[in-house]
Amino acid sequence: MKLSDLAQVCGCKLEGNGDHDVKDVAKIETATREQVCFVANKQYLPLLEKSRAGAVILQPGMAVPQGMNAMRADDPDLAFSKAVSALRGEPVRPLPGIAEQVVMGKRFEMGEGTSVGSFTYIGDGVKLGKNVVVYPQCFLGDEVVVGDNTVLHPGVKILERCKVGKSCILHPGAVVGADGFGFHFVAGKFVKAPQRGTVVLEDDVEVGANTTIDRARFDVTVVKKGSKIDNLCQIAHNVQIGANCVIAGLAGIAGSAVLKDYVQVGGNAGIADHVTVGMGAKIAAKTGVMQDVAPGLKVAGLPADEGKAFMQREAAMRRLPQTMDKVRALEAQVKQLMEKAGLAAPPAPAEGNAQ
Image (tube, rainbow, N blue to C red):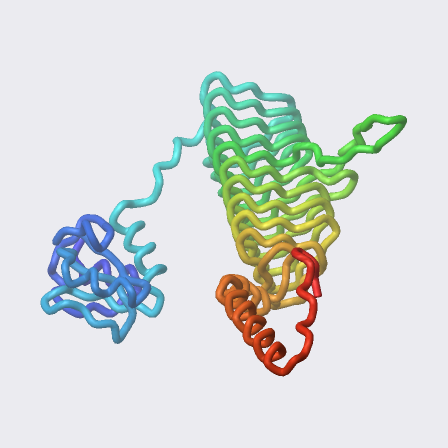
């Protein structure tokens, strides 16, 4: 593809030879004259000096080596994604229809353009919209509903009565509608509490590989429109996730927690049950949220604290050995001064006792 055409597709302003042909994308370090790279941060600009890339996508004002073609964009990361799609094409979709070795229940409905892969199980009353892709080895329980243009990758399990909206993506091994973790302690043992609610994923939701979203105990676990959940996350029963939230890998959200719209949750963070996280709040990686978080607040640490306070405390902790050395030196000076003045030195605190 000529650079002039690629720049137009990516929404970039081209500086250089528009007739230069490129065939693929690559990292700065490995790119050749037939490849395009990108720079989203100034710290990577020195790498361009040694790069052999045919073109680089970067922000206006960033310097490029002499003779290198530049494609300017306010958001180079987004422009590079468009270049990836333009040069590598979209993923190949299976042909419409039902493959062999599919088990189908009664009252199955399937829209135009939908495909169902081999070794998939479809329960009674399942409804698939138009242009749905169900890859092999999926399980769709009774009364499951899947909206138009949704993709279910291999090994996805959607259990009975759960609903998935339009244009969703569920990656391999995702489980929607497993039982919530609920028990009563009776007569010295745990007795299972029935989990008879459902799960609803609204439109344009993405669920990562091997992530689980549990059904509600008696109501609905909800993930609202546009939210994205990474791999290996646990979303417990009755959780309510707002619109356009982002939840990174290994995060866990306990039962009946509520995330308002536009919340961001870092990797390996945990949110306790019945906690409400306000709109636009940001939770750092490995944070333990044990109480409500105000809208727009950034929190970090275990237990969670306001982000700036946490960073200040962590910085102080890293200086603690040097601080202790200074305290001991000051104690010695005080002792010497008191001895010269003929005053009794104060008793030293017992080891390990707080003063």
